[in-house]
Image 1 (cartoon, rainbow, N blue to C red):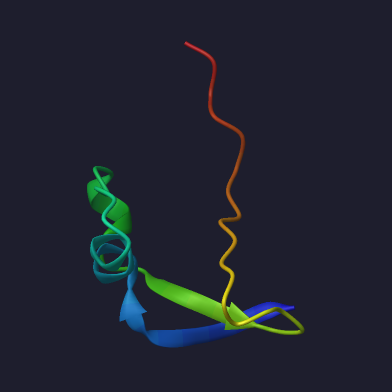
Image 2: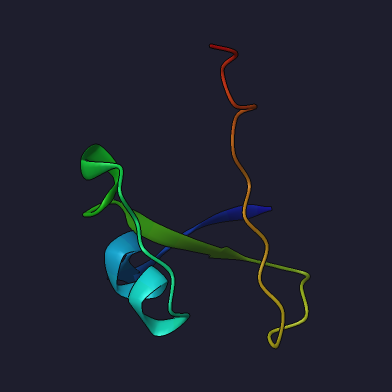
Length: 52
């Protein structure tokens, strides 16, 4: 269950892992935490990409 917001937003998280977040509406959303997970791993859950 991934349901606890962290004190870091998505822009800060992406910056920490040297990725660029280019979707403006997402930059200030919180990153969420949950368990059971391995704390040294991260997973990105997202909707499928839209077809052109």
